Length: 370
Image 1 (cartoon, rainbow, N blue to C red):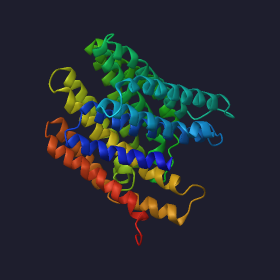
Image 2: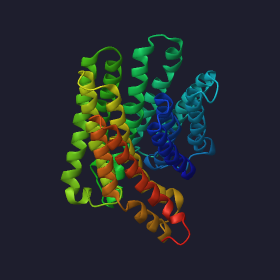
Image 3: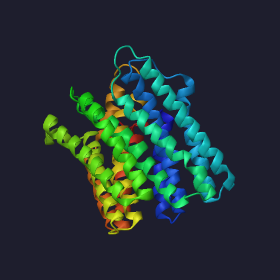
Image 4: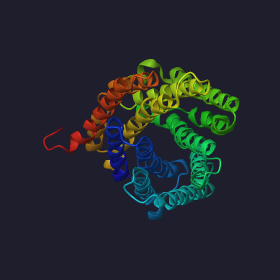
């Protein structure tokens, strides 16, 4: 997972640079998502499901899924950019679909073989993978020109809110208390009660964006209410001071705030108040970047130094946690400015936040650094 996480950071940085340089927007978006975000989520699912189901480490075939997805994602982006033949798109998308379904089958199998009742978080991952598979299944129809415009919206929303949104909301109630070093005995009940509303909201947004805007508005309202309830739960449980104290917590909280902003921007786009592009870049800068950097702040030390806790792992975690509040502010402000149409300012803020994280991540590898 360390290699997949490293390549994801490189891919996200490259996507930001290419986007600023005027690269093909579709190719840049698929580079960031198919070669960066999707493999990282696959890897996080493979990491967390054994914990949620009290089972052993994934087999080598499952561990190979994230790097394979990264290879196919790079092929998709290269084909869209014209660096590889266009026909590669279809087999690469099909391969990602097979990987998603294979990982979904593994998740369900682990849950069924769990001794006792598995943690409800596994169902969120199953839902996220199901949304990913449904999004990828639309690719051949889009390529064939069958209802291409609405299916593109279906594909887009099932990925950004289905795969990423469900995986995020299924992880954050467990990850943030871990980052704070405090327990939350209510997190499992929160996840159990909110799965159906969130899944219904995602499907309503995807179907509504493709075919009927009012349905999308209902779905967005459901998702907004759930995300807001998570923030309220955290404030009541941990207090504001702990949530902004530093480390991974500020970025994880910023991701939820960014999701609220994304849903608001999406509703504004549906009503014709803003164009589509500002809402998409708001999703990337205001939600995705704080989500990934916050999660990696907590997970990279474990992947870099597996096994029992060690001083090296602790030092690495502390290094990643530095500037956590500054990164969160950069990403949130970037999302707002990008949604407002101030592209240059938003891009600089997003690049600053990502740069701060990358510098913290590579500092331990520099000779003489502490």
